[in-house]
Image (cartoon, rainbow, N blue to C red):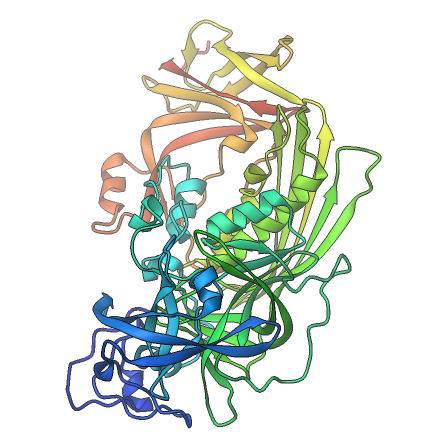
Length: 635
């Protein structure tokens, strides 16, 4: 059976008698619902409930300033801010530590445990930008412990839209691919602007979790930073140093609160890792960790590898100072990504998706190269990481300000409930003034991966990705300049002759004739004839009933070097889960259209279509309306 994605639980009933036991925490909100009367956490360190925290209380925090050894700095409570987040308070504090007087609260300190009167109060998680004094905010330990109590369900990987933090700018999942594949021109709403985007210096904000990057060029690095909302820093990210994925195995670490922790997004020839701090260590063998004190992406259930880390240096900044750190050895799996914390299990070994990227540059003197990396498994994250690897290869392959053609091929190996599948997607794109790597990052294969991972039928397991990008100098492009009917009257059943004028980028024109058959039953109708390039139109397909149907639909496309001629009829057809319904009266089609569910069937115009191979890439689209006369009378 398809596995359902996790939905938000309903809020629990309030009760002053509820205490924070493991069973009680299971009923807590996944977003860090504060519990009124917490008991001791499953660790030897007692906790300081937020109800007992008062202004003027003194304590200390533990973090790594350099290397792998943690150190402490003193803090003093300013006040408690109630309901700073949904069902979560925060504690404001300041520090007079000389190191922080120079750097302020530092990105990468997220999760640093803070103790008040010898009891664990929570994690350093929030700060102010451009502030003169080191003032920060604490996520209460009660909210974080509720995250640890959640069950580990690796097959439940909700999309960011379910948590209200989707970073995508297109319509997600099967709704999105249906619009694109069935030819519906649906424009997405612009991305939501948050107050922090408009004025990053205003208000208490969660600390940056710096993303250490190695092996990526500047364009891919900027793209990752913008898409993931993280500060990219040059450092170690689990890079293989040009020789593929390096061995990150090592002895199991005995974790302590205050240790540095890295979440591995990619590793190998191109590597990225997000760095923060461990707040709490629990479990019978110290195998359960809580860190960050805030979400990484707020994706809910996760299955992303983590490593211990080494801090190289803290870079002071007027806006926000940040730690520069590198991951060391694989140590476990991030299993929860929630409002109050990330949850980690060191007794679980994660898997990553191998990605091989082949690059052939336009310049003949530069030899081709192959990059070997691995990316984390996550619904929203995996396509972005694969895209970044493609962008990085494109940047090296050639971005000269000359005419370039990029050929991209992506082979996706995956497993469905019916067994292993392999899907191949290819396309060609012309760039008149040099390739723009960001555009290449929006390759159709990346879109296909997003649709596969965010489908409504079952969890798609991507086993591996192999992608090729090659650049060639030249301009193998023709634009459709004009289309006209090269005959007199058009009758039903006629073979209509079209004259199509093409123009090269240098202005050279040529004419080609194309014949299309007008349907025999189109008498007294106005038909629409459209001539366009193969990249600008998709085959019509039935709505899918399962993941394998979806894969079949996503795989269908026309060659980039082709011209597609389509005759659209006035009456509509219907794309449903039972197939394409084209030969029914309009009244019947209207009856078959489900009420209250616009996705169960999609209307489209009936048509006849021809696909003509071409030697060039065809740009442009031309339409002309033709009035069809009754069928010719033959003697």
